[in-house]
Length: 229
Image (cartoon, rainbow, N blue to C red; front, side, top):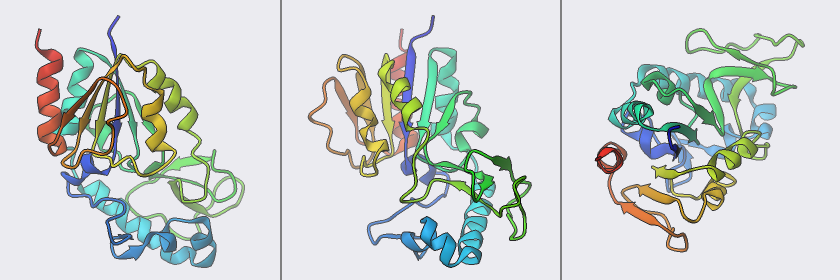
């Protein structure tokens, strides 16, 4: 049996594909206050603006391509049982060829019912139009977890982390919870590779290997370490 390699990815891995990080230091996402476009209250207050915002983000995602880091993680399936947990709402891991991807915050290429988030649907193209309804007759919204909403995949993600033989953290500041707490579920004896130009505070954890590089260069370095036999 292959050893289980668990990878937690954040915005840093998709940034090298041209997708801007979710929230920069000024608190804005593509020029918008995140609380104006990423909360249930914003959706109730101005659904047309929120819908248009995610339509534009979806268009950007569909125009982007997986980068070398995404592809390298997919290639590692030849050596490991790779389980990817991502905070990102893009589908670049899947398009790179990864087989097992858990999206903590949803995926922008799908829609969901406004009243039942378990009802999700693929979106044809980049535009989700107002007046498109789910089977219950409710408006479809982006399949994205907003601030103030539950993160339904956090439970399965903790179980995946608890079984990691090798762990990689790529392009995340460990600032957004509950995703930031997943590293706490990784066994103490498991080697943890942390890849980011600015390594987050991880000194309290055991068996840490810091790779202070962007995702593409950092993943390439770790792949050499893991496959050098």
